[in-house]
Length: 465
Image 1 (spheres, one colour):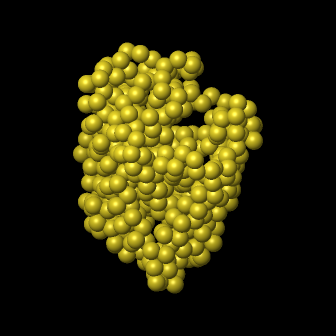
Image 2 (cartoon, helix red, strand yellow; image 1 turned 60 degrees about the vertical axis):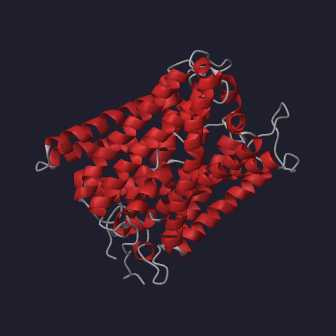
Image 3 (cartoon, rainbow, N blue to C red; image 1 turned 180 degrees about the vertical axis):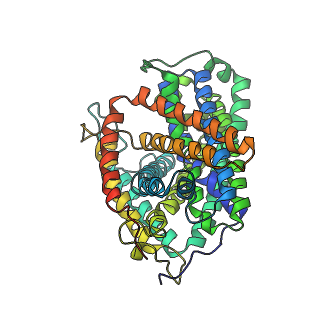
């Protein structure tokens, strides 16, 4: 079974849908409200944050697109790191992706999938009983019993789908990508028209929300929030070995997908502002805007589409997550490479690697619930796993860009210097924004990061498979 290889089973359309589908999902629904809160309802500043976040993503997409045309092995970003910096650095990036980056995002998306599913249920059946914890003021929190149960169910279901039928998982990714574009595009178009006609949009561009602390640097804080919404495209490189004609199709998918994502996010953000006041959007999220613009019935249907879009994003993240240990083992590295490099003969999936991924998700799920959702763990070592690990990947990109510029002497000026330089500046900006906005939380995270990476270093030495 260890001699089985992953086959080329994904075309350009699936690859584009992988990029768009992984990135577009709960992030824009979830973080649009956060951006408003961190800017105090300043719509122009929020738009600037979305533009900056998108440009940083596109800069990295262009740089990695050039690398994708040159290198093709098992796991894109790890391959690029190995060629540009060296095998040890590549291993550490692979270990980080496997144990921190993929699992934290997958868990967050499982929770958001559950949360928006329940939002839909409550919108169509307001009297549906939910067992939920309540805060000191008696308000319902995001830690309902049903939400946690659904979160676990979605994690396991996504794991099973990717292990038992990778092709079906790919088809699910394509279908959910188109489904999730429905509410986004409708709100972008209809919301802008609605807001222009009734004056809400013009008013929101001049009226800010009250009750939100915008001390420090609100733009940096808002850009950090957009990082979660824009992140995930790099996961598409994890199926590099499974994309047909990947040297052409992967760069195309990254660039086309990146442009689609940025355009949709900016117009959606403006469209939402046409449906409700900044104060209400900052306080309650975009649900009221959907209902105002489309009416209660159709607005609730769009809530269902949002829940499905979250599931599609989670599925894409689980796809990358499940290949984490395999990408290390395929190089003879990491713990038990003989076991984790195995490809199932019947399903052509990396089942053993997927099991490890589910365990990592479970561990980070416990942390996320206790420290961020339930609030029962108030410190130390409390940080936002939906933002800071994402900023870490930007920091890890920087040596790759520098190594590419130094080594690839045969490349054109644009591909060798311009693209990676733009990506390098954007990555450095993202790291700076994180330190400024998260402050002490960055220190607690870096301690956890250092411990996990030290554990990974134990298995760094290459082994024969």
